[in-house]
Amino acid sequence: MLLKKTLPLLFLFPLLFQGCTNQKVIYDESHPSNGLKPVALKKVEGLKSNTPTVKPVAERPLSAAVLYHLLSGEIAGQRGQFTQAVAQYMQALKLEPDPKVAERAARIAVFAHDDRSALEAAQIWVKLEPSNLEAQQVTAALLVRTGQTDAALAHVEKILSLTGKTKKTESKGFMLIVALLSKEQDKQAAMAVMDKLVASRQQNPAALYAYSHLALLVGELDKAATNIDKALALKPDWIDAHLLQANILIRQGRNAEALKKLAAATAAYPDEIKLRLYYARKLIDEKKYEQAREQFQEVLERQPEHVDALYAMGLLGLQLRKLDQAQASFEKLLKIGKRVSATNFYLGELYEIKKQPQQAIKYYRGVTKNPQHIEAQIRIAGLLAGMGKLDAARSQLHRIQAPTLEVQLRLYLAEGELLQAAGQPGEAFEVYTQALEHMPANARLLYARALVAEKIKRLDIAIQDLQLILKNEPDNIEALNALGYTLVDKTDRLQEGMNYISKALTRKPDDPAIMDSAGWAYYRLGKYKQALELLHRAYAKMPDPEIASHLGEVLWVSGNQAAARKIWDAALQQTPKHELLRNVMRRFME
Image 1 (cartoon, rainbow, N blue to C red):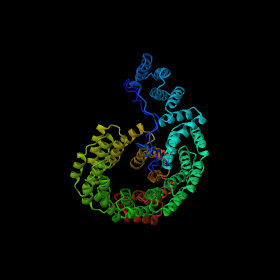
Image 2 (cartoon, helix red, strand yellow):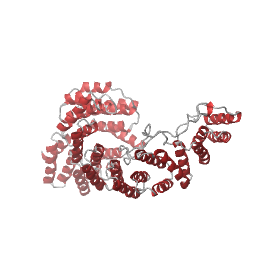
Image 3 (cartoon, rainbow, N blue to C red):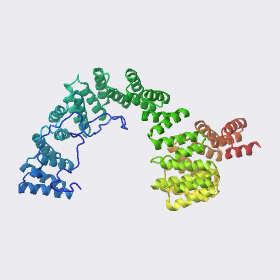
């Protein structure tokens, strides 16, 4: 519904243009696509409104005809009849050329995709209030939208004159224009206006920066790179320009060059925290974790309680297994009371790595906020089970209140996994079966039950569940592979099983688990050469004990017992308690 109330509440119509008098645009490095986006803030510091005080329409006497058209427009809008609403407001505007009526008419016309009427109303509005920054923006945008770039330029220049009283506000004015033009679908028209605006300002770094920013947003990367270089040549100490330059280089695929530029800028301006943090994050993106850690450490030497740097140092410590460093960073965050839940979560993880389950549980219990709260509770259950407290672990899971079906599914799966790890596959089967009563045909539950059904020799259920998954999801790669392997390994339906595995391998040819299944299928079909080729490739990618057991068996029956022993011995050293591996070795070597 467009309009919820009639006069005198004429100004409830939502703001359809993002730029307005009380906004500014700044650099925001958190933007996921390129690190840059216009950000609306509450006001532009240092700017005073030049808009004259205008008495609202509802406060002045209205003729019966004007009132009729305004009310008719409101009613039409409430009914979703936007074309009629626009027509009524345009009639009211002709009878009463008031800026508020013009603004309302322009906005309704924009909403109705009636650019001609919107532009007509906006031009009346801006004529009545030439110093109204919002009126200038709306008019400029509509002129760009209708391809009138020369006319749009005049209003863009006016926007700049209204905002650019000082160098600081001039820069904000340019970025206001970037925000305005970047929202237009016709990117060429938007760039044409910017070309004209900046043509006479080639020695103005703010203009060149704004041009580069818009060029980046619309994908004109070469223009963006050229102009940011010019801006930095004029103002080499502009930190935001260094950040923008790096973003452009990264968008161009020149990541190494971006890091080199950032390193040079950081060396030149060592106390610029924003620059150093940004450089560190880009190093992380390139998986240069040790170098990133050094940059965060530099930040902490300047600001010992910098929250982002402490948090990053903790995470990098976990990543690099520098656990003492990670612990110190996280404990300092707790001491200053910042990011408490997230910090407790990662301290819990740290103590899991240290194999100190009681300490891990202590910190996981301190995770009170989403999104990590549920995961922390599940990890507590896993730790309890690992300590031999299976009943307590299950009770822990049962106490968790699932806010969504996805979380409830996660809890069912977690309980089944705990039971399997405890050597109770039959109990796990029952958990999955009960869960399927609440979530029938759920692919993840069916898959989990199929795997455990095979372990308890309910091959009929395993095959049935995997077939049901494939009935609903014919391209489910995991189910194709699992069903194929089950048929090949446990039945005489070898070619049928091979067909399923082949489909999975076609869709994911480099997956070592599927290669292993295919190799085992060839072995069962008596094709040892093909089997060895696939099993060697699978083991090279993933030296897993199950793959080792398969590869060793095929090597043994092919007459290469020495190679088989070597594979088995190496795998046994890594996983001395692996049941399948030990069974295969006993079968052939004892």
